[in-house]
Length: 243
Image (cartoon, rainbow, N blue to C red; front, side, top):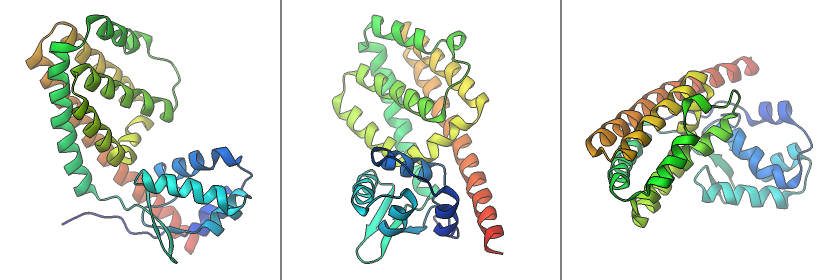
């Protein structure tokens, strides 16, 4: 049976707490961040009017941002009902992670055969734990991590694999992202990426496959646990507001 969160955080709480003047060009990014950080709770309902009031803009830029977020699978727009933030279905996400693991393993195996050495060496420098920046935002780490995996898929030379991996990433981004709120996880990500790249550079296919499988499983387990914890915390905060 699917494990889904229930929408119990009133949007008015978020709206009143975050009311501010946001540049029109930043409305999409701000809404996306609010969804990914659970400020807009999964399953909750918002309307163009409420968001336009919160951002102090007309409904047009809000509508454009919502349509973009719907295209990315982060919310559903229902005629005459409003917009509903996508529920988090842990069972569904687990299925996507299984597909992701298969795609990533196939990508790293082919990368061992086809990825140019100069490109592997370039990525090794980028992911050298000794060169890890002292400070990196969640957004920056999210983008850098996703770029790593897409780069390996590109290195496999299989365009279809890249396409499917990008599609899976779009569906798991909300849970995958929470992985990088923890500094130890960021540090471990650098270490694991570096080890995977070393195995590719040395063309050790079995080792590369094993390292990638473990890497994806650790990420899934940690992100799932942290996501459920964050959802419970947000839910608890909302209940206190309601009292």
